[in-house]
Image (tube, rainbow, N blue to C red):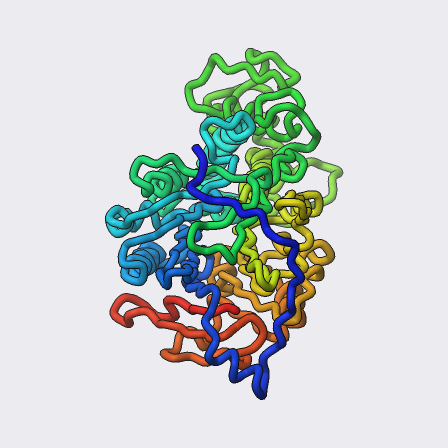
Length: 524
């Protein structure tokens, strides 16, 4: 299905740089200027939801909602996302022209499930998704199979880790990390992220979503002739998506040329399934009938040399052997430090990170260009390095003019920072350092406090925050900024300045919760 969008053949344009605000006549002009775009960023921290308002030629408003979700680890997150959904409905009067679902992660789509009663009455014109969500695209089907198999394996590993009674420090840390990453795939009650994504897709009342990628021709929206939309990501390259260790024709866990740690993880989980006596582990050097089950030995159900060996060297106290050096009493009583019963589950961490990185790299990344000035507003979803680097080769023909994605990056004046400001989601030389406009401003959907609770100490990444501050002249807003928790809060930079005409904020109803609800910026 094609989108209800129109393309225009542009004249060759000479872009005029707008003067930077800060004083005199320019500042006065900015105070009375009409914003070309207003963005209401919701402040749920580890989650994304952005309401974009464009002003059409006839004076009416065009509303675009990009995502609505929150990470399952956030305490009270479901109540907060419902408050956000209510605000969206009230602000738009229930009319959303376009709903953009950037990618299939819980912190971007949970609201369409947990606040379904609010969204169901909204009139959504179209739903935009990335090509990798299409049920008809061969590459998308292969990728979806990879996600399904990976999630199945990770759920099995998580159950094993949760069942461990005396986990080592390593395994306890692995368990916590797995729970945090799996929070992008499941809700607090175990709901699959697919259910939330499908709920979002169904909001256009029977109209099939519009699936997009860099191959989508740049387009304009009816009534907004001065704006052109570019789809810069996600890439189709498997290497860019970071799903495999080498190129192949398919994604998947079961293939012989898939990452080497995936098959052993599957085999280990299958071999440990209770009551499964028929499973044959092809990676095991011994036939199934050779040896004894460790669980049987530990339960005292096996006698003989094997049981005696296990007691002497792994489970029981150290025997006092004449002629051997003495050992400390604690070690003599407990030899569990010798055992590696569940350490094989450590390979699940590699799979979890690979899945997380791959799904983030499937983010639908959009650039909005103002045709009269060439200024660009960039919304990259949670695009990580692979997605960003693929833009270096993306280009389109618009009429007789070639437009390169790298040129859009250079002309960016407003950036929604990807993946909550994490270290691998904003490239330096081929990302932020390419943004040459002195008017650059940015928003970071993040909460350092919430990130630390789930042991993400580097979110947001300090070096990225410093680089953003330097590139923007300090015009950076974070969802966890303290001033957003105060009614009529004041940012730590002057307004109007750069690409910002005005900044407003609203706090949550104190009966519902604390902190800021949203921050809204008018952009020029």
